[in-house]
Image (cartoon, rainbow, N blue to C red; front, side, top):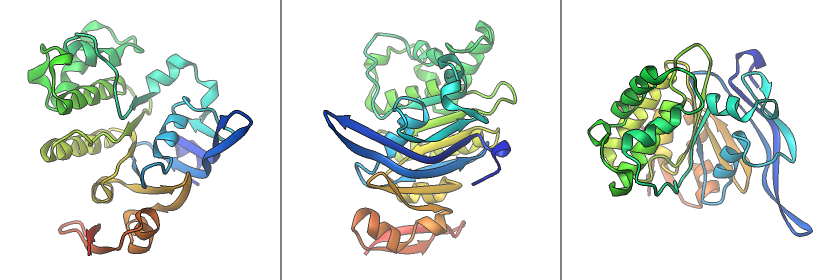
Length: 267
């Protein structure tokens, strides 16, 4: 574990259970991780591995059975809901927003927890729209957009929520943010996230594409059945034995041109 004073997020011996009547099911068990400002952590694993449960626990949506979570050197339960909203933004897999708001109005919702003023907020919203290529959609109704366009608008909303306006470290949690994006917008998003990490933002994203995780993340966490299978650098996690254990498939690992990071190819 990293020195606590250097960490944006520390998850220690985390266990989460789901109660159903008298029985209980373990969603997560024995999870340890730390994240420093400026790092991007990718969570990989099969369906039902616990990726979404871990993100929901980090933001306080799921209760902790055992263990602890600290954000900015404070226990997560000690942060008020407003403080959490100012420091942590969450993009779920699905958004249920069905109101006829304009794109700009939807993204402006991300500034609700802050007291930075209308002019500053409007400037941040415009910058967030530009980052994910929705500036040209600003006056369109959200309900009239395609699935990929809606995803990019929601991405802009959470970016606006944790936009760096001071030295306070912030955390962005993304659950399958690439699922509705085409190849060009996937690369645009990942480059934008790297830029924001360079400004001190911490990012944790659950992603199915192992090669994207390997190419862009500073560290990876591989989950299966709510437990850690492997954690560390791309070279430590993206290996044939780990992918075999996670997904039950045989993969060949090749060096990525340019970076040399591991790339999984089916055989």
